[in-house]
Length: 437
Ligand code: ADP
Ligand code: MG
Image (cartoon, rainbow, N blue to C red; front, side):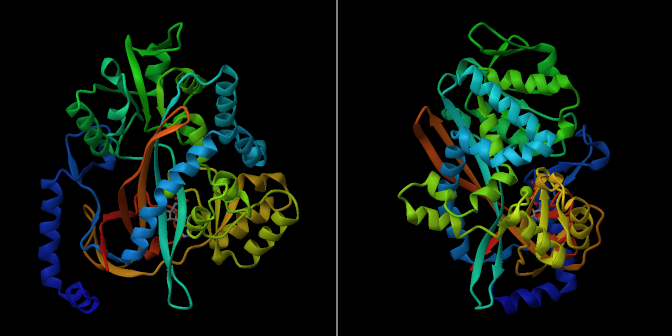
């Protein structure tokens, strides 16, 4: 759609109202649904998932660039997960001050001590990007982060041998907003005659056990694959028992999607360390073209470790906070710090090791677009929007052999520019589609 026609369309109020109703019904027809916030644990009443009315224009070259680099990101995450020395070094400062990452790291060490039983690794990543217009008019793709844990989409587990006599276990939360997303994956697995069960940490504590060969049984059923959809936030571990359940799963023969080392490879601290000169070369030795392609998508990332480099980053952030995002080692949205809040938070910890719990990142300045954002109960109005595009990558490794490594899809989300500093896409973002040009 040419820009002119699009702009004209955006102003045609009666047509917009009509199209909005069609779009909502279309979402219902396609089962594009979510539960209501006020009844997260029930499917009695559901609504359409938040969507943009129109797809958002995305330069085709950037789309292809992100798609192409995804398999390299898969390789990178997988290599990091097999490099305990690197993880130890990269996370050393973080784990002295961040208790959650420290606990995950402890599980990682314990698993290493006991020896890895399972040679099959299933990875499911999503690398998220925004794109910026540079001064020379050229548009460039910048990675926000890579998610290695609890990423939606699936179907890959069907490639794993032996699963027919066991089940795939979804490790889930108590209340699930994203139930439809998970049910779609369950349905695909059932289509392939693979049974699925849904369990919470509490269920594993109560009825999970390892046999003498470290096979994992839950309710007397052997679990072939644990697919984590919960466990990435500190409050997901409601008691010590939940941590014990995580350790039991990690030490078991079951294939984990992802395993603990892959989880740690997805931390923001690792993302920042990867941006340091020479680090990517460790994972892609003698492959300068791949290094260059991966590095081209990095935004500026700065350490806040104690020392001259960290001091410089602190000074920079305090002087021009609007240019940066301050990120703690958390996932799931709403944790990042922007603007004046950076002055406040960093001001307090600027001389203390507590600052090492964060990393500093250049704020990406995406090109805004206009669109209508549809959400239950929200009045229809033209909004200034910012978009981000995530690419799903999946791989299966058996021992040293990559059995598959693919880019398997994408996810486009758009939010109103009012929320550019909310640090979250949760609750403020709308599903969208890229319109390539
Ligand atoms: P989380 O693990 O909580 O998803 P992210 O790093 O993905 O953390 O940040 C959450 C959201 O904040 C992103 O989806 C994006 O909208 C915004 N954001 C994060 N980093 C940046 C950045 N460097 N520049 C601009 N926006 C950002
Ligand atoms: Mg994110």
